[in-house]
Image (cartoon, rainbow, N blue to C red; front, side):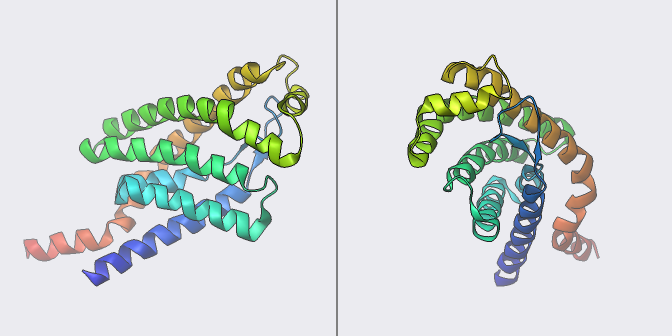
Length: 207
């Protein structure tokens, strides 16, 4: 039992480290506000959620954001890391929970779709009512200042609602779609490694 727990901890830690590395490789997309940067750090978390369960995926999300904030240093007073954790956790937890009940390719795809829908909805609500106002307050600025900053990337962003509709929602849909696609390409190749001890156990039982 202890060996299994240690094995699981090692795998989650490895996925968390991989997610952290991917989080460093962020890319600024010109059509979105500067604080929305594309990176594929949810991919290891999704892999962990599928292979080790939804809670494991959430732990990977937590680890990568702690590592990112501590090692690189937060440029948003930890608001960006908090947002990344909350939004990413919603995606991987729902996707992982659905896949746990339907362990096949179709279940994985549907899980990611459901996860994306809930993630986009919650990201919109959290950013509108909590995260963006809180971030502005920490900076000693107003929400209007954040709007003006965002308008530099898209002049149609004229208020907070427009920022959500033209920035937050399309960005999260695009990001989740890319990460879901990459996860589906990689999971079958990586999952045998994460299930290695289970495979061995089954082989022993057959003998």
